[in-house]
Amino acid sequence: MSGDRQDDVAGTGVVLSGIDSPVVTATVRLVTPFVLTFGLFTAFHGTSSVGGGFQGGVVVAASIVLVLFSFGLDRTLRWLDTTAMTVLAVGGVLVFAGVAVAAIGFGGPYLDLSAYPVPKAVVYGVELIELGIGATVATAIVAMVVEVGRWGRR
Amino acid sequence: MIDVLVLTLLVLLAVSAIAVAAFRDPLAAVLAFGTYSLGMAMLWAVFRAIDVALTEAAVGAGVTTALFLVVVFRTTAVRASGFRSVGTVRARSAAVLAVVVGALLWTLPALPAVGDPGAPGFQRVAPEYVDRAPALGVDNVVTAILVAFRGFDTFGEVVVVFAAAVAVLVVFDREVVR
Image (cartoon, rainbow over all chains, first blue to last red; front, top):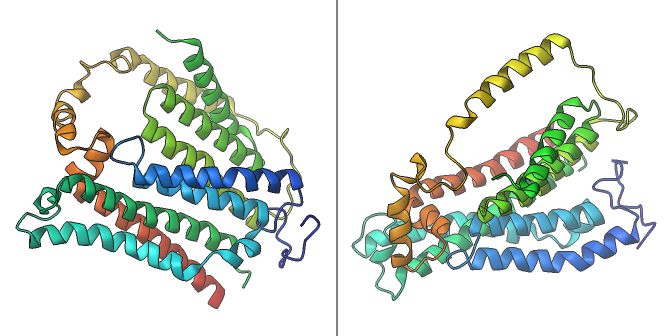
């Protein structure tokens, strides 16, 4: 893997074309799964422990940005599914809006999570919303970094 | 009641904040800014604001630094100046700065102590939130405030984040088409 400079399409320098350092790539390989898991844990457990959708989302995004910096933009874009990212970004907003609006259908006011006829409705509602927030935040941040990085390169 | 850890972090923050302004090399300034954010995240953690610390570490020290780095590498051709190049500071600017900082420090004794439960900020809605959050089954009061009590604001925030991503995509696609 080292010495592979063919990703450096426009000669953009070190960042975004991959760092030719086995130390960096090996460290990122080792660290990223744990950072990603921690981010997902934070997003899933927003009601019972620290963090939530925003925190978990940005930690997940940071782990992908880490990969992007060490392996280069082109190699990262090869496995980054832009369709899935679009679905997650839009889906997060729609989940929040859906949970908020559907409460009206159960007789409560807008955003009243206790209106749902489910045990512990508020907890599950909050967790669902947190996951939506996490999906939108993570994909939005990754999309911004990727888009700024490949500006003018296509 | 200032312990050594907090004092060290405050010194780190002050030094890195001055470094951000003093370095002429954008790359050095960005790295100093990342250091500042990391110090800030550690300070939040010491003050037990873990939710803020997480966000500061991931967004401030991580993603923002990454974005600035990308922009620096995409806009500056050669980084010749290096870390040792520090801009000169005019005596008049330093004097104005000293007056402003002095005036701000003058107001410091009027602030309540860190974590003081009698602070005015904790008197109005905070007890209500703290009382009602466990009844909802949401143990993390921050999450309860964000989603359950202030869901309207939070929904707006998510839409803002989404809109920011859409705006970046639209603007940068424009640039390519031209």
